Image 1 (tube, rainbow, N blue to C red):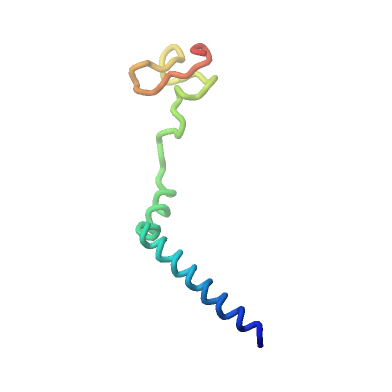
Image 2 (image 1 turned 45 degrees about the horizontal axis):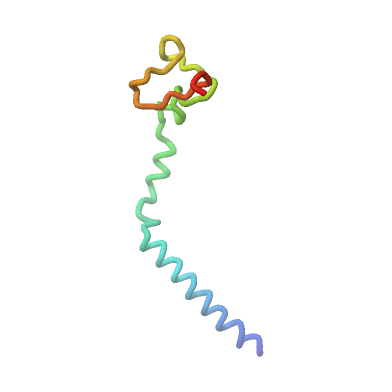
Length: 82
């Protein structure tokens, strides 16, 4: 019976922490877009995640000569530049 003097306040404190955490997640916008990530995973990205001219040691096969042009806005990283 004496354990209830410990468990009831502990349960109340845990409940207050859980409610505070829930309110924080709502205020920071964690639940605003629930369907976006589910639809985004189904989208097919045609663009590679790593640009071809940023791959170290792999030539860019799309460009003549195997090198990327300097005017495409991407940094030219190759083993020759080092």
